[in-house]
Image: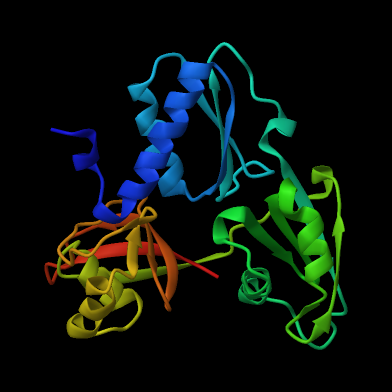
Length: 257
């Protein structure tokens, strides 16, 4: 069995790039820096490390618990330093008295100037403050190009990571009962969709479990799984208990704001 057989078809281009970077780091005994990775891509990269000898994978998104990170591939006798990740933190300053900036507003502004998603990391919001972590090599370009977001004139100011907003996961707990731990049954209950309507986005590749696309509606969930459905949101499976008197399973989920 080939190593590529362990991954989905759409993941193969990333797997090939990751293997190439790992091989170069091993052959040249040097550091290689990735763009921003989502948790699934980081997990793939870490799993591929076994294909090389003496290469370590270190990751940072600018603060502990960052979802999107850059990874440094390096000989395991070295230590990756904070500056090796080439990160910059920009604070977006503007008058939000009448319009509050949302995650999608900032995302849209960055994509509008031609950035690819892998060039910036987490977008952090707290009341009337907003920050974005991005690749240092594009920081000056972004500061010059982004002057307005959602009709609000803004200024982007680089600040030290000591001032990073540490996000607190805003999560509302919800209890549902399902006939089985199948993913189509669960998202149907969580998002009030019929089984038929739940199948449409699943078959369209819009469902991810633990940041991996899942198009099998019979996939069973487990406690700890993070589920996202494009257009609906994201939740984590906190607990599965049961059965109830009616023979159904009770599932506690945490809905992310």
